[in-house]
Amino acid sequence: MIWSSNTSNDGPDNKGHPMATTGKTLSHQPTETFARNHAGRTLYEQRARWLPGLDQPPAPSWDDLDESVRERWRENAKA
Image (cartoon, rainbow, N blue to C red; front, side):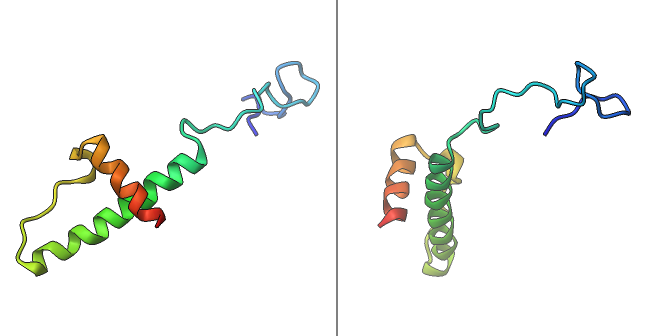
């Protein structure tokens, strides 16, 4: 909860109420989308760590992949 910066913790109306909020989540990305992206990225990075041991070149970073490739990893992560 966000309170005003004065020392009495009174809200802007000085009635002890917190500052107005929208009541919405403070996330730029819905939780489900974030979790799905995280799962895909985690799977990709785990598999990428195996490549050097298989005498393969290093995989590109997740951020360097095309969106279609990242989507494929997200799908694989839910399977």
